[in-house]
Image (cartoon, rainbow, N blue to C red; front, top):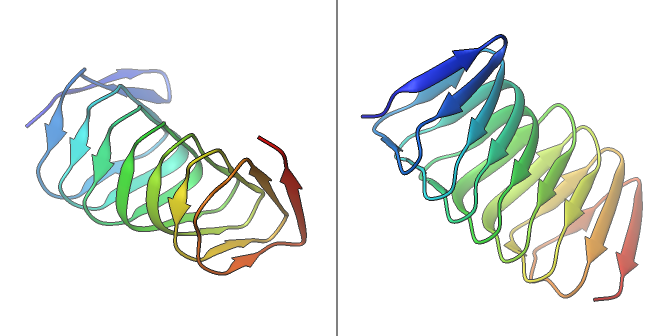
Amino acid sequence: MAKVIRKGDTFFAEKGAYFDGNVKIDGNFIVPAHTHFWGRLNVSGRLELGPRSSVALGINCGSAIIGSSARIKGPIVATGDVTLLDNAIVHSVLAEGKVILRQGVRVGDVTAQDALIIRGRIKSGKLIGKSVKVLGD
C-alpha cells in the first residue's frame, strides 16, 4: 500500500506506488508514472494520471488528464474536461465538459457535453459531442 502526500488541496502519490482497493481523494490528485490502482478511483477535483499507470475499475473525477499508455479498465465519469494522451487505453468516457483524444488512443464509447476533439488516428466506439473536430496527425 502506498502513501499519499498532501500540499494544500492537492495530493501526490508516491512514485511507483500501488493502491489495493478503492481510493477517494477530496481535492486534486497528481499521480506519477507507473502507479497502479486495483480498485475504483474517486477524485473530487482534477486528476493527473501519469504515463503507464493503471486503474482496475472506473474513475469519477472533476476533470482528468490521463497519461500516455495508461490503462483504465472501467469508465471515466467527469464533471469537467477529460484529455486522453497518446496510446492510452480506456473503457469509456462520459464528460460534462470537453474531451480531447490524442494519437493512438483506444477507447470505447465517448460522450462529451461540450466539444470532442480528436488529434490523430484513434480506435473508438461511438463518439458523441456538442461539436466534433478531427485534426490531422
